[in-house]
Image 1: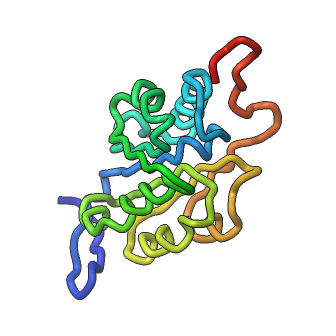
Image 2 (image 1 turned 180 degrees about the horizontal axis):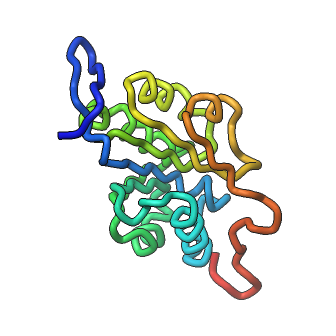
Length: 171
């Protein structure tokens, strides 16, 4: 097995460097708590453009319960996590990041969000030897999060933001 040694507590594990985990805070990238199918298609298209192996990676997408059905249809191959309440999607992704199996199973982790709440857990993964990346909208990228990742892709805000639902469309 090709791998990287990862310290997990007092033990050292070998993580498969070929496995890639993509964690998606879809509400953050779409810019709304209840993204439409059009907005979700925009998010997925951007992720395919900037993450070379997006289609082959293990993806976990998180959102609130209100957006769960729409997100489930938009990301059918992804593991889906939803949680209600303030920062529900963030908390669901934090649970995924804190799972020690991430350090054992993945050599790379890409976080798709700009929220600073992820800075410390992402830095912890990087310190454990996992290659870390962040994909975020430029306008919502936390300075702390930017510093915690090895690679950062800031999606431009210049007219390429998710399309909003027009008059008469459900939102």
